[in-house]
Amino acid sequence: MSEEVQVYDPIPDAPDPVDKSRMSLMGHLKELRLRLIWIVSGLVVGTILGMFVAEWVISFISLRLGVQLIAIGPFENISSFFRVSFTVGTGLAMPVIVYQSIAFIAPGLYPNERRNLLFLLPGILLLFLAGSSFALFVMLPVATGFLQKFMGTVIEANWTAREYINFVTRIVFWIGVFFETPLVIAFLARAGFVSGPKLLGWWRQAVVVTSVIAAMITPTIDPVNMAIAMLPLVVLYFMGVGLAYIVYRPRVPRDFSEE
Image (cartoon, rainbow, N blue to C red; front, side, top):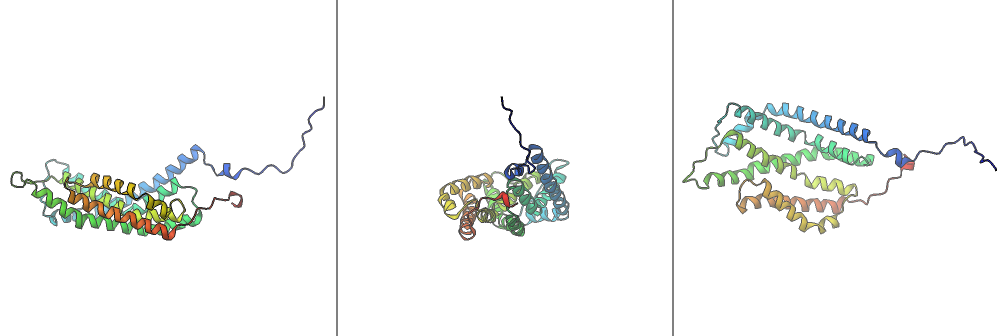
C-alpha cells in the first residue's frame, strides 16, 4: 500500500476575509456594550443640561397655553421636573443616539458612509428641534383648547402636573423624532439600501402607517388634531422620497480582498 505523501506548504492559505469580518457573539455583545455606554453618557449629559431649563420649560408650556397645574402628590413636582429634564436631554442627545444605533445595526458601512452619517448629525438635531417646535406651537394649542372646552360647561378642567407634563412631553418628543424621517431616508438612499421609485411605490403603505402613528400620538379623538399630526408626517415622507431620487446610489458589493 502506498502511503499518502504530505507536501509541506510554506505559504499557508490566506484567511477568508468574509469569515474574518464576521463578528463573534462575544464581539457583538462588546460592541453593543460600547454603543450603549455612549448613548447612556449622552443621555446623562443631556439630562444634566436639561435641568437648567426644566423650570422655564414647565412655566412656558403651562402659562402660554393657559393651563393652571396642580399637584396632588408629594413627589409630583419632582417627577415632573425630572421628566422634562430627561425629555430635553434626550432631544440634545438625539445625534448620539441615532449615530450609535445606526453604527451598531449597520457595521458593514463603508468609511465614506460613516462620514456621511457624521455630517447628518447636526441636521438630525435641527429637525428634532423643528418637530418639537411644531408640536409645541401648532399642535398643542389646538389640542389643549379642544380638551379644555370639551364639556366645559359641566366639567371644570383642572389638570395635574404629572398628567399634563406626560401628555406634553409625549407629543413633543415623538413629533420631533418623526421629523427626522427625511434625513434618515436620504442616508439610506445614499448608502443604496432604498431608492426613490421603491419608496414612491410604497406610498399607500406609508400613508396607512403615518395615520396609525398620528392616531397613537394624538391626545384627542377628533379628526382635526389627527389631521394636524398626520399631514406633516406624510409631507415628511414624500420629502424623503424626493431626497432619495436625488442622492440614491446603487450599493456596490464590498470587495474584502482589497481590505
